[in-house]
Image (cartoon, rainbow, N blue to C red; front, top):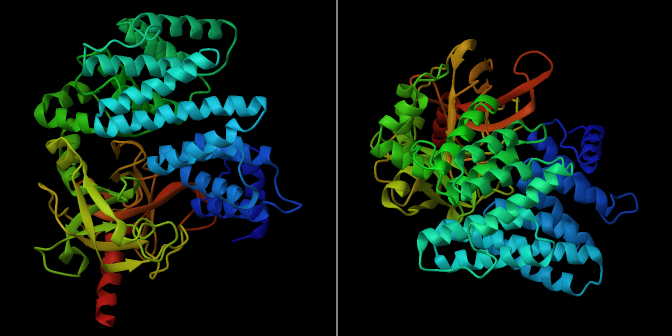
Length: 550
C-alpha cells in the first residue's frame, strides 16, 4: 500500500475522524499508528484516546481492540484507553475477557489519586453493569440481572446520579418485576419514582442546553417505564431526528427495547413493540436495512399475518418477498468461537454446487477471513461453531454446531476490487451436525446484468442479536470482466462477512466479503460506495481446479 496514504489516514484517525477508505487501508493505518507508539515521533495519549473513541462510535470494534492492545503492549495501562478497549470487547461479545480486564483496571484505578481515576472508576462500574446485563440477556439468569442492577445502581448513587446509568436501573428493575413480581428493589430504586427522577434530570439537562441525543432517548425510555406511550413516542421521534443521532445511538436504544423491554416490531401489542416498530421503519428509510430479532422470527412463524400488517403498502419490497426470504433463513448461520463471540456469517449449499461432492451432501460456506488456520484474526476451524437463528428460536435456546476441522476448500482474501482467481476469500467446511430445517440454498452460476433495475439482496448476522436483511437500495452496480466480482449498493454492517448474496429469485449468486465508501471501480478509474461479493461461479471453478491438482 502507498505509505504516504497510510500516514495520511493514520493522521485523520488520530484526529478523531474515521478516514474514508477501504477496510484493509484502515487496518493498515491502525497498524501504522501501533508501530509508532513509544517512539519519539509517536502519537500522544490524547490522540490515541480520540482514535479509539471514533472507532468505537463507528462500530469498528476489531480495529479499536487492535489499537488499544498495541498501546497496552508498548506503553502500559491508561485509564481511558482501557475503558475503550473494554467497550469494544463487550460489543464484540467477548464478555469473559472484558470482565477479566475490568477487574485489573478497577484495581489499578483505585491506587491512583486523580480526578480522572475517580471518573473512570465510575465508568468501569457502569461497564460491569453492562457485562452483567448482556449475560442476563444471554441466559435469562435472575442472578445476573440482580448483579447488573447492583452495578448500575452503585454508579447512579455514587456520582451525581448520571441519567444514563439511572435509566438502565429503571429498565432492569422493570425486567426484574416481570420475572418475579414478589421482589421489591431497595428503597430509591423503585418504580415509578425512579423513572420520574430520571425524567426530571434529563429535562433539566435539555433545558440547560445539553446538545446530545442521549437525553432524548432516555426521556423516551422513562416515559415507556411510566406507561405514557404517546410521550415515549414523541421523545423517540425527537431522538431519531436529532442531527447528532448516528446509527450507533439508534442501535443502542433499539437493542435496549428488544432485549430488556422485550419489544417486538411485528407483534405491535405493547408500548415497547410500538417504539421498536417506529425505529425499524426509520432505519429502513434512512439506513436501507431491516433487522429481525429471534422474537420477531418466532412471531412471523406463528402469526404470518404480522408481516401483512407491518409491510403492506411498502413500495420498495413486498410481503411475498419477505416470506420467501424467511424460508432461506433456516440455512444461514452465525459463526462463533466456543464462548459465543461472533465472527461472521455463512450458509449451507449442496457440495455439488461447488463441485466438491454429491448433491446429497451439505457444506457450509463463509469467508476465509472468518474461518481459517492461516488468515490473521480469523477463527481456526477447530475452534469454530455455527448457530442457526431459526433453529435456535424454535427450540428456545442457542443450538451450536461444531465445525469439522478438515477444510474442504479455502482461498485467502485479496484486495477489494482486484480480480485475482487465487484470492477469493472463501472457506468451505462441513459441520459435525446439521440444523433442523436447514437445507441447501439454491445457487446460480449466471450473474445478473448490472442496471438500476437489477437488485441483489444480502442476509447476514451483523453485530448484535438479529438477522439483518438488506432489502433497500440494493442495485447491482457492476460485474468484473471475469465474472468473478460483483459490486452492489446493498448496505451491510461488520458481521455480515460470509453472507449469501441473492438474486431476485432468491438464488445465491455470490459470497459477500467486503464493503467500503471508497471501493475501487471494477471498470475505469476512481472509487465509489459499494459492497463486493465473490461469485459462486468463480468459487466453484477454483474449488474444482484445486481438487484436480491434489
